[in-house]
Length: 302
Ligand code: 0GY
Image (cartoon, rainbow, N blue to C red; front, side, top):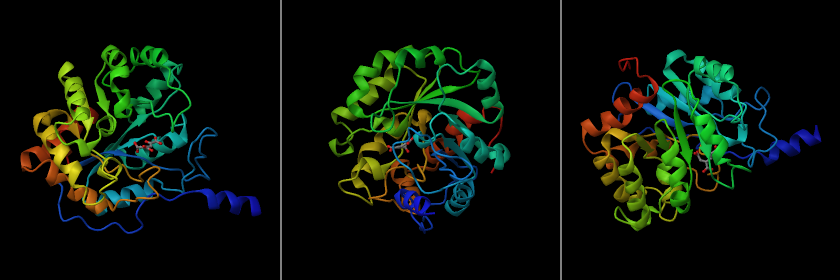
């Protein structure tokens, strides 16, 4: 009992307990294209190699937040704390039928039959995480071998910080499927829209028409100023305007590792019209683009 209490005490909560209702109303069919689930640990234990052990934030909470914020669909991205066991992600997807899809993290040696099973469970991509504070290793050669045998219509999601972009460029060029960059590769948004990090990202986007990005995480990228994250809005709005067909948006709930600066999810939603000011841009960001990647065979249904 004492052991159990001690380990419970170490688990961290990184999400807002009562997010505000956003002023901005997303269009019908809007997709939260980057979110995670944590556990619940009793059913879905965390990986022994996890770098953080969060409190439970399961599917029920995620879908309650979806409804509260006015969204229709979710893309659940496997968080590093669950390692390569995608059971919690798959269960979340299974709970809401076709209204959720997912991105898995797998051992690169995964058999084809298991990839096919993940596809049946709603997975449409794999995530390669290059953040040293989150994963022990990121074997590029093995990742590439896997990328070459992904099921049809899958893509790769890649997570790295801006200082790794140049080093990863040949690796990214070799990936033979669409590539989605988590949180834009974490540029320093305080450099502004024409800063070195944004210029490097634009060069990458210009190198291939099938590289997408997530215009996500003002809370992570504008941490010095904080909410209302003005530097993020200034740096990211031109990117969304110039690459409108390749931008995705998501809450990043339950905001892994953000326990010291927990964002209000309602305020995150209110960032949308600041980076996508017109109804047409908002529709691309929230509906058309994610539907194209995750539900290519369906019309958008609210
Ligand atoms: C994110 C960001 C983080 C963590 C993870 O898989 C993860 O653990 O994604 C992070 O700590 O930067 O994408 O939500």
